[in-house]
Image (cartoon, rainbow over all chains, first blue to last red; front, side, top):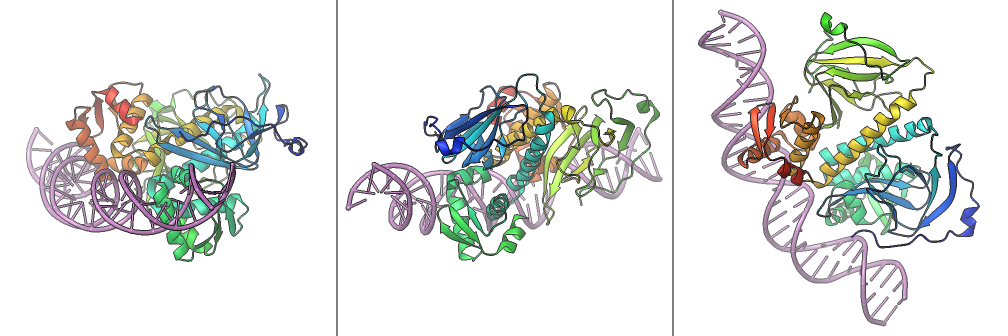
Length: 215
Length: 215
DNA sequence: CGTCGCTTTGATAGGCGTCAAGTGTCGTGG
DNA sequence: CCACGACACTTGACGCCTATCAAAGCGACG
């Protein structure tokens, strides 16, 4: 429904030469896997166990209700790690948003990765809990403001912020419809808070205003 | 605003004789601390580091917006552990909902608790992410249904479910107002899905209906 | 240059929040 | 044991925010 069927694509050779990040000593490091836009990285119900680090591109983690309603619980940009779960099977879906390179780490059975995983799990927990506040208690404009701040900070706090995902993805992350997201974009643009550089790229003009809205 | 000022109360002697849970070998085990209804266990900004295990009673974990809007990210009932965070300071508030006994574990500096903490962190992460789906994509009746199922399962899946928290707490957990929570309770009662045994105790009559609503 | 999908904009409706007034329950004190 | 008071909960009326339905605009890509 959301994911276009899409096969793994062979990795461009220049990417194969990148050095794997060294944070998972002892784990088997596989070369970078390449996923095209919409490709599934793993699905709910599949066997879990591997770790995934985004080399380039962007990934969405989500869950579905029976009738198709979707909630994206996290976006992962370059450098971030995802895929660890409490159970032996995945509770969520992971999909590439755009052309995305992912490095897969698989710990040999018996290896204890707790020490490396705990900080990642705690970070994710904090993020998720803060996002609960956004979904539970903020209105549309506040949600979008918080989202812009979040995306900006994950990109080094620059004024120019890339939004690799569609309005649909943003809506499903913020618990809004695509129309509401679009209207809020327009309102923030008209207020001079942001500028739309292109469909998927904004410039933050009044960061203070965004910050005040986001909390 | 939400918490009544309330001091720690000396522990009844019969509780002091309980054996500490053995899941945190190596950690310093303190006796059970007793908190009365509304008492603060820790506050946002305080130094973190200890672990808390609920012996009896119930605890709410929450965050506030500047204007006082509150989002409860989790309830913790007897047997559950909370208090671990990514940073050295707490990002959240923890309060006793009712008279509550909490055992405090403090690992000696240098001790690595990753192995014990990781499963707890992952469990919490899964819970939070599933709650995101509820807050982001479910309507009032679905949220309450999901809440009843969650509370039932945390109490052994029995028909009779105790709700130690107020409607206000439930609202702040589900991203609803107290009035909406109350109206949904009434609707579910009128539909014969639940019975209200008392203000804070329900009986689940049609579990299947609740399950179908909750997802 | 045409087509398809994504985004924007508009009109309308409904669900939930807000404000307000009961009703009930529990704890305290007489 | 009963009466009282405070607080929590319920119920009602109304309005607003956001979802829904619909159509037009825009951009990317073949």
